[in-house]
Structures are given as structure tokens and as C-alpha cells.
Length: 134
Picture 1 (cartoon, rainbow, N blue to C red):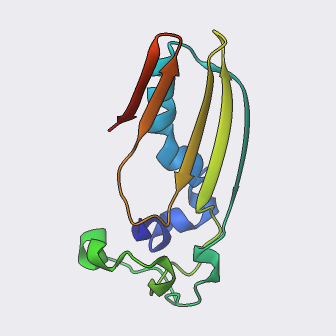
Picture 2 (cartoon, one colour; picture 1 turned 180 degrees about the horizontal axis):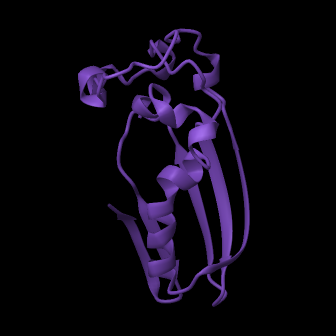
Picture 3 (spheres, rainbow, N blue to C red; picture 1 turned 180 degrees about the vertical axis):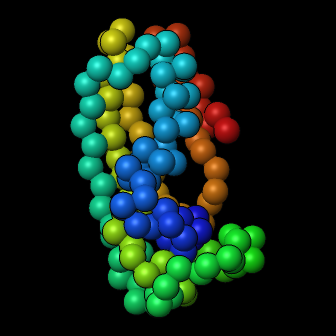
């Protein structure tokens, strides 16, 4: 998911965090599957990979669209990325634990340097398990 670190998403001034910017949709799905809403939460994240990449553009690419530079085939390995946004200060790895208002416990993890670009949901309940909903 190199594109988050090559455009305005990489600068924390423009986003609340990638956990909420990207994960908001997943949190909605967790609420739907869990049939409740988060009442307690703890989360942690860090800039553990993309902050170590020194290849940065000098300034924003004015007038250039993401489709002009996005190259999914060059997304791996992450440390080979080039021309990142001049400012990269958002997390690239996050994890969160939630307690829903109906007692359901849920966890969420987000990794922005994986070669995969899909979501996996696993639901475990008293009647069984549904794994890897995509």
C-alpha cells in the first residue's frame, strides 16, 4: 500500500491517522458483525518501516494524479520504495482492541507494508467460527 506514503496521507496534518483514515470501514464492519458499538478501546501503532526510507520527493507533486505514479507491481519489498512524500509521520503498523456495548470483544490489526491488499475477517462465536471473510 505504498500510495499512502507517496501522497498527502503520509502527513499527519492531513489525516487523523491511517488507523482511522483506512480502518474506519473495517471498524464499521466489526460493529455490524458484532451487532454493537465500541465502548472501550485501546490501540497502539508506530512508523516502523516507511520512516526508515530516505528517498523522498522535495515537494508535493502538483498536478500529478495517483494513477500517474501508482505501480502495484513495485510495492514489494517495502524498503525498495522511492519518492515518498516529503513528510512521512503517520503509522504504518497498528493494532486495536475493542469492547462493544453488548460485551463482544474484538481486535483489529492494520499493516501498510504487507504485499497483500485485501481484508480478512475471522468471527468466532459460541456456535462456531467463520474464518477469512473477504
